[in-house]
Amino acid sequence: MRDHGGLDIHSVLNDLGITGEVSAGDLVVHSPADGAKIGAVKTHSATDCDKIIAQSVKAFKEWRNVPAPRRGELVRILGEILREKKEALGALVTLECGKIYQEGLGEVQEMIDICDFAVGLSRQLYGLTIASERPGHKMREYWQPMGPVGIISAFNFPVAVWSWNSALALVCGDSLIWKPSEKTPLTALACQKLFEDACKRFGDDAPVHLSQLLIGEADIGEQMVRDTRMPVISATGSTAMGRKVAPIVAERFGRSILELGGNNAIIVAPSADLDLAFQGIVFGAVGTCGQRCTSTRRIFVHDDVYDQLVPRIKKAYGGLSLGHPMAAETLVGPLIDKASFDLMEAALDKVRTKGANIIGGGRALADQYPDAYYVNPAVVEMDGVADNVMEETFAPILYVFRYSDLDDAITRQNAVPQGLSSAIFTRDVLEAELFTCEAGSDCGIANVNIGTSGAEIGGAFGGEKETGGGRESGSDAWKGDMRRMTSTLNYSKELPLAQGIKFSVGE
Image (cartoon, rainbow, N blue to C red):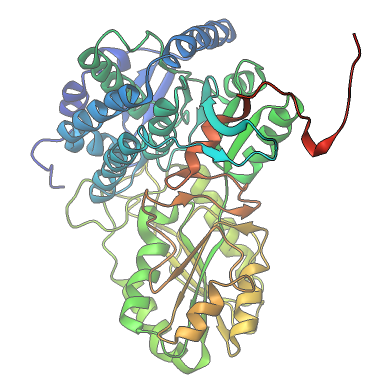
């Protein structure tokens, strides 16, 4: 394994300043890269949770009074610190969640990018001026801070998802409570330390407890979700998790921002640039060992190009570089744990009994890493077996289907319960326009000539149907962290009523 300049777990933790915080605790953390223990952190109790929420409410009441451009300055400083610590934090992402080091660095770059976006946003929290129907009146629309924002993140993007939500919420005037995945608490501790460093550079305008961590299992997250002092809950994870979170928040009339499962598909049309399609499909399917919510799960390949493209994909799968995610030559790291491996095997067994042709699958590197779960990415040809696969398996399984009619391919793509990411490879402008029109893809993301994976922070990120309908990151996603206020001002000496209503009260 190449160590990338000595970026082992000890030097990484030391560089990030959290060595003491991860040396003892009841939650033991193991690296999926080799199964070794890399830390132990203290979890929070129900009493701790109540205290943390109370502190967040107090911090919010102070932070909302800080002018938005000044709030943006804190986020700018955080972005600068992230630039300084990019290599160390990227390495910790790799060592704790198992994605390759290049992807770990890319995830930290996403954090930097969203900070840059939010700094500009801090001077653009625009409302509206609306024409009033009443003489001598002005009508305006304002956006106001919402309150403490609860962020629940998943293991596969242990820092980027927090940053998408936190950078926007901070410039909007909200305080933060972050419940990270219990599988990746070390990266959360590192981000909290970097945020505290940013607050020190920023000065006294940043109240204490502006951002806090809530570490524990699902029960501690549920306590936060149920608390009426948390007006916004942004939850990223499985559809099953979303089914629990959404009704709880809705019952108390809170606001939930949900980014859940994806069963993402790529359509490869007869006119496609097959080199582009090949690269997009393989990265989308095996990147992060298939553990992205935007990972490519299904491809629909036109009959005319099927025999050119699919054998090429299968050949590439046979030569993928599997190995320790910190090694420079590695393209595919491990699954997060044994439970994920068992789910992958069960999914392959299910289609195997139906007669599918499977290339790959099974455990890899078990002799070298007996306590880790490396796998051979699988290509599953479904021709003549099934028209679709409705369930998402969070693992590198690529289901391959044929099609002859584009309308049919789009229908089959859309037929699944999830609606996150989708793509078409075509050089036919009519096909591209059809795919992105109202009768085309029903997903929150619909790409043309790029794959399903690798969204930029400038666009709002999220999907429809069982993906939850929420939006994080760019565009106008910031509105999810604020409340809308309509204000009508009368500068006349009369009191005309709207809609011309006459209501005279005698003295």
